[in-house]
Image (cartoon, rainbow, N blue to C red):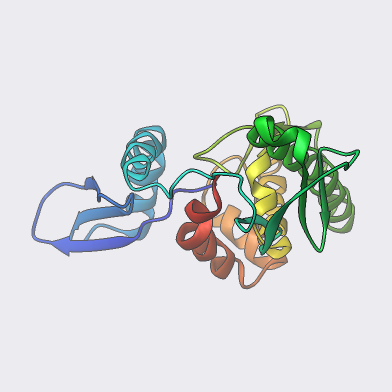
Length: 222
């Protein structure tokens, strides 16, 4: 996934510079005549530094940690579901109208939720990959579900697709956008104009989903 530039400020300065705000937003300061291509290449070349600094900034203002108590809400595929604690429930966690956590599992609630989300991510994301790769004639090596917090998905040079299990917390349309993004990377291994044209050909409104992730993605992180 490319790093999103939240604000571009042009001035009479001679060099490009990056600034990370306290909320993790990225500001790029550029010379008046710097081309969009030059700016994009500059940002992409500093991806690791940007993601590290954004993670540090967002950790300071991150939402309060989940308490796993009755009445608390948890996201799944873009919707919020209330948590109930249930006695004598065989499965540790179920989604049936609400999230239902077995009382015996309360002490391991965080681990139980993550395990449930991972299982759903593995199933849903693989289904979407199979559907979209077949529909648009992409080929990939294998799929990996990770615990990444600063990147929703990635594609290795050998065609292995990796996705954070946290992706499953977002709406299915956003999941599809990330899947398509990484599938296109199996053919175009950078963020050139050719890459974005390929994404746009499949998803003409891809920018909406990218903006949604940048605006709301941090709020669904557990």
